Length: 260
Length: 366
Image (tube, rainbow over all chains, first blue to last red):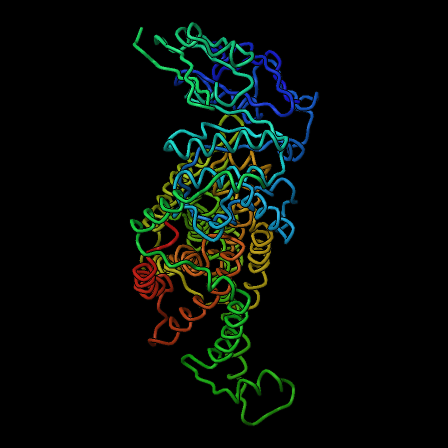
């Protein structure tokens, strides 16, 4: 469904940040992107989406290169969820989620009843419908993140791309977000998430992409990519991966032990 | 659908409440929002009534009876109505009141559009240097002793030139970012205001300088149908352009990547809104000089009443702006024997009013 072929990118000519990225993602799949700070995770996400242009290589959506598709066609299939941050002008939650309908409306069109219905359904799916009349500046960070996911869902996408959705959230909200992403997979929506937590990658994703400092990357099934050796090499940290079992729950812990 | 049961959000609700305690009292604008159409209709009626009443106010006062007679019985000779009365009403007051309504609405909409577009609550119609550019054009025209029509044309031309300069400075790697636009606007604005100073410096202090100075402080005097017909189409088209794009304007105040990822052609919408606002501002400045405050004040009043959704902010700005300018201009021409520059009144009346509103609402737009 979603594919990147030999993607390379650099802001300046001689400095490549990302080199030769390859990945393939099917339906009902979750991909995690891992890597140290400043390695280009956000840049990678932007390149994937066509917000930045690959210097070489391309992104394919359903087998067609992204460049050949119209903007509306792309953004009706891909929903982008940015990190929750404050906006200059606070809209209400309902207004914010309605903005997700933009790609379905012509430039001068206003959202109608049907769009409002879809927005409410998305809020209901995520269990935050009760917030609809609140201002986005008056809800918690976890709630705002849910609202932004709802906004992305309002486009009715088949792929969600989330930029560090669980950063800055407490334990409980982190789990809520991760469960939501897993639940959406059951409903047929694939996700690509950018994360700082290898544990989360192991917990929810089918595939993982690990960016190393030199611009190269490893991509494959999560179990094969997120290993002690790989993490040690990418982050420069001694890492211990341990399986814990609490009754029916199996959990994999990733512990950063010491700096190399 | 299944999610709802699995994700109890009890604790999140608590978080929300805790946060609410910390934020200053923000009055939810929900009640007013539901009555939005009612509000617009009421205010339009008030504008109509006040507009007709203000036809009679001024140095040469006319009563309601006379006004009706002049308007509806134009051809029949009437001993009660003198030629002077007719001239005052038809050639001076009607165009002037129309100009007040249209320029008030225009400046407010342009201000609201720039605030949304630049996602900056401090933006005004002059943020991109349009008004400063236009006032340079007008000052140049006055210095050269051109007649009113040419002064007007020169003002519009230089207003547009200023924005074109700003836009081309801000283009970097084929894209123009908001911060570059704002900074380029500041620089170009400073440049043109220096040029205005040069003109004031070389102008004859006996008669040219005072007229430049008076013009720079803004005034609706000297309006006639000719200038109105020349300038108002720009304002009306500009308002219309922004009005039909008002929902898109909401997306523009998000971060640029986010707006693009929502499927919006950011560069195109941005260009259209800048064109609309520029047309409005340049035309207003060309007809009535620099009028401060309206473009900042009115959109914020609209936001305090109806929230930040531009579906409401733009229409509310149109009616509130028209009414505000009508009141200000009526005051400007009737309080004292001499005409008071409009910018002085907009600040003196506007500032305290704005402060009261800010204190009362806690400024919900923050």
